Image (cartoon, rainbow, N blue to C red; front, top):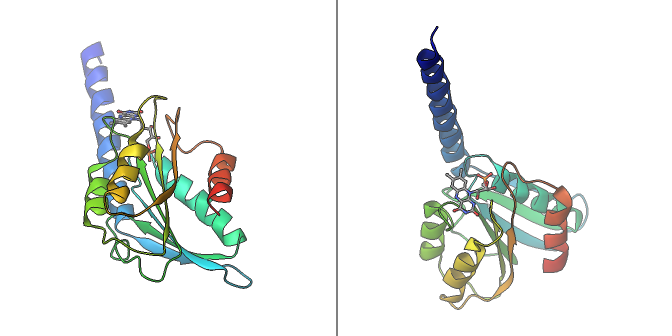
Length: 179
Ligand SMILES: Cc1cc2nc3c(=O)[nH]c(=O)nc-3n(C[C@H](O)[C@H](O)[C@H](O)COP(=O)(O)O)c2cc1C
C-alpha cells in the first residue's frame, strides 16, 4: 500500500466518524427524558441542549441535571429538536446550552431561542462550551432571551473545552450559583 492509499483510507475513516457523530447528535437532539428526585420536589427545571459533535454540551447538561436532582428538582433533559423543548409552562428554571461553532451558538439553538415564547416567572440561564477563551456565544444566547424580555440570571462560557465536557465540578458550581 502506498502512502496515498493510506492517506485516502485515513481521510475516509475520518469522514465516516464525522458523519456518524453528526447522526448521533441529530438523534439525541430529538430525544428527551425526565429525572425525579428521591425526596420532596422543590421545583421543576427544563434543560435544553444541542448535543453537538463530541457530546460535551450534552454531558454538561447531564451533570447539571444531577446537581439539580440532588437539590430536589425534577428535571426534563430535552434535546434542542425534541417535542418537549419549546413547552416551558410549569417550569421554575430554564437552562439552554450550546457548543460554539464558528464563534456562534449552533443553528438549532438559535432557531430554538427565536421560536421560544416569552415566559414569565421562570428563571433562565445559558451556557456554551467553546474551544477558545475569547468567543462568548453564550452572550448571543442571553441576548436572544433578553430580546424577549426574559431576564437571564446566569450566562457562562466554559472555555478551553476541546473534547467532551471536562471537570464535572464546574457544572455543579453553575447550578449552585443559579439556585
Ligand atoms: C466544527 C467545529 C467548529 C468549532 N468552532 C469553534 C469556534 O468558532 N469557537 C470556539 O471557541 N470553539 C469552536 N469549536 C470548539 C467547540 O466549541 C468545543 O469543542 C465544544 O466543546 C464542542 O461542544 P460539543 O462537545 O458539545 O460538540 C469548534 C469545534 C468544531 C468541531
